[in-house]
Length: 161
Image (cartoon, rainbow, N blue to C red; front, side, top):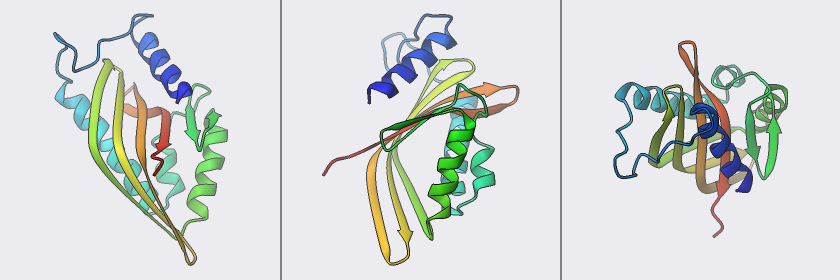
């Protein structure tokens, strides 16, 4: 969790030239622009669909392909596209079925080109005769490069039952 806090703080600081933005719920904070909400929700839905059809190519299009990309999988930070790509291929390649559901999705604009999304996530992965169901929170930092929004950071925390 500490790495996620650092990622979000760094993303906010970078987006604001070293000054962090107030959370969207803070008094006096402005609403997230509708185009940012639509873009972020679209990326989140594309991410869900790419996992469900187990498409490495569709997932690859959603991530930044630079050294700044950070994805935390099962407590391990993966830095840069090559490391993330290998982990995604492994995860998607070993599953027969993947089903993902979101709830309580929240989107915060950190800057005009940076957004934070959190959502409760339930993921069911079937591999052979075994099915694993995970419940937790997904957090992503997205950044706008040219005309496309890309995932710059991702973290999933399991809910301990």
